Structure formats: structure tokens, C-alpha cells
Image 1 (cartoon, rainbow, N blue to C red):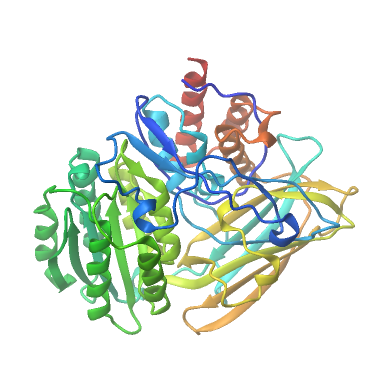
Image 2 (cartoon, rainbow, N blue to C red; image 1 turned 90 degrees about the vertical axis):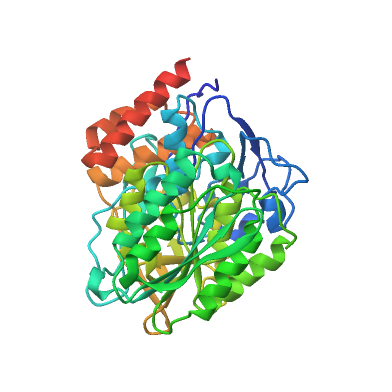
Length: 511
């Protein structure tokens, strides 16, 4: 069992997931993608494990034989380092609302083992938790930017950047043209896979309006259309098709996605939500279409307003790398569903935001004042880096945000001198999907004497993620430090569950 070394660091937020048992064999893949610090605005240390080939079939780890039943595939994106504000005052990254990494971690902990360090994306841990940011009333986003003393490092400040998207009532949501692409291969023949997919999609379909429609494509050894695009008025036909799903054959993910996109294109509705929803464990071992062709097609469809969201299921044989890459290219979100409660949260409480995108290519840029900030470090978002010069390049791909969604990022900052005024400026630039115009907003980064309880809790979550991924910036703190802060600031069901996970992690690390 891996033990946790004492660690410390404070974090930036967003989210992701995966789960597995203590007997699992972990096969991680890592790419060396470092850019010079001056070019990317923050430099990463990237582990030197083998790089996966740049094809979808290889991301899916297609082999001549099936993968081992307990293979798990993750990618190490490295750790952001401190950057001198005098040399490079700009930090630029794409917004991200994925949460998969957090729920994946939760599965590991509940099974009595710590997740591999490569499975941890700290921003997805932090963005798992709902925030109380006030929604904007007359624009697409509202920004909250503030700072306070770090609860883990005496000589550092925590800077919190939060953005909140405009909210829509369920009746204000656009009609949805959805295509479910469902993995029914033999690897999905488990209660926490195909059976949980069925229960999850029941929850989603129950929330649909008569103006919505659903088509279903399944794939095992080959892809096939199970249900043509059908009005949600006929929910019984849709639910019956879902209930009839049975596991079959190997895994031809490429063919399933091709058929799903073709159906979405045929049934395309202008001024509506057109989205492909992939439910899978990410494993693929059949199919001839190379990754670059499929990923390019997914990007082409996204430019035509057909988006892709991916939802992961299953412990053991699971490919986190593929599921995240597909969602990124498809301009959608990636979540991991480990329990029926998580399905309910995503498809009931957050359905409008999950389905309806309010802004595309959302980029965040923080400009630190070198007179007040000596150096800074963005916590997380290592795989969402954007070159500073591309902040206003509106052809640069970035993140997508749905109605009512919020994004949080945390920085560790070393001050140049005691600060009593703004530390800099945060800017958010995005393509407004309603007006079809590019917009940019900004706010100053304010200084506070103390972190609010909500931000302090997120700092605890971030520190926990830093410890789990063995960040060199978390060497001065411990899980006990995280627990103390989390217990003092936790409120609500999700936060109290986090406290229990920290306690379980401490027990595991002692064994």
C-alpha cells in the first residue's frame, strides 16, 4: 500500500474522477509536453513515464488482444511551478468544469486504497463542490477575485479566482436533440457499469421536456442504431430501449461515435442543444479508425454546434485518458459516475448546465502587479494551459461553460511587500453562444485579512489533492492539517463527505 509522505501546498480548482480496488494494476501514460515558462506563463514539471501514441485507437489502448481486466490508464500532466511576476506577470488558462478526477479518487478511497498520483487533477477536486457565487443579472459571467493568508504556508497568500455563469430556469432551456452513445461491450457487464448506465439515463430522460428528442446508438464489436431520434413525448419508447440493453462482444468505440455523430447531424435542430452523450469505461480494442481522424471529426462537429459530453463508468479496467481527451475535443464536460447519487446530482440538479452551453472558448488571464507580487503558482490546470499571447486569439480552443456553472482557480502567491490594495487584474474572455459575439470582462484581485470559510474549505480540498499527487509544494503539510481545516469549515452533505474521505485516507496511509 502506498504511504503518503508529509506534504503541503495550496490549490486551484476544477474537477474529474475514477475508481478501483486495491488489487488493481495501474498502467499510467504520461506525455512530455513542457513549454518554456516564458511562453506558457507557468512552467510544468512533467513526469518522464512513456508517452502514449497520438491516435484515438492508441489513447483507447487498442491492442491485438483485450487489455488486462484491471488495467487503469491515467496521464501525469506535471505540477505548475512558481513564476516570477517581474519576468512574467501573466497567467493564462482555459476554464474547465470537469469533475471526474474527484469521484474517481472517492472510489479508490471507499475501496480502501489511495489513488495513483497520476489520477489526481486538483482543479477537478475543487470544482466538484458547489459554490455560493452570486449569479450575474445583466451579463454572461460574474467574477469574484480576492486573496487572504494561506492556512498552510505562513509566507504565502491564497488568491481565489471564481467565475459564475448566468442561470437559466428549466423552462428557459433550449430544446435538446440528444444522442446517447452507449458502450455495451463485455467489459461493461458489471453492476457498476451497464446497469448503472441504465439507471443514470433513466434519471436524465425523466427530466426531459416534450420538445426534446433522444436517439440511441450502441457499440460492442460493432456499432448499430438502437433507436432513431425519438420525441421525448414518447418517453416509454426511450426508456424501454434503455432497459433492453445487454452486454455484447468487444469494444468498437470509433464506430459507435461515428454513428452517433451521424445521427446527431441528421436530426440537427437549429437554435437547439445538439449533443452526443457517451457512456463508457473508455476501453476500446476493436476498430480501424485512427485517433487523429476521429478527434479531428469531433472538433469539426463541435464547430457545427454538435458537442460531446463523456460520462465514465466502472472500476478496474478504465481509461481516464481517452474519456478526458474526447470531452476536451468535443467541447463538452467529462464526469465520472460512481453511484446513483452522483447520477442524480449530474442529471437532475445540474442538468440545464450539463446540456446548455452559454459560452465557448472561455479563457482566464490573471495579470499580477510585480510591485506587489514577487511570484505566483497556479494550482492545477496543468493540462489547460494557454499561451499568454493567445488570450485574445479567438481561434484558440479553450473551455466551455454551461448555464449556472461556476469555475474556481486558486493561486499560491508570495508578496513582494505587505499589500493593502489590489494585487492585479483578472480577465475572462469568451464566445457568447447567445449573441455569437466575443466578450471580455475584468475585475481587480482584492486583498482581505482572512479567507472566508468557503474559500478556506476549498484550500483544504486543494491541499488534499496536492498531497495525494505528491506535489513538491505540499511537503510542509499533512493530512492531519487538511482534516483540521476541513472540519472547521465544512458545511453541507458533499463537504462533510470530504471530511470522511480525509479520515479514511489517513487510516489507509498508516497501513
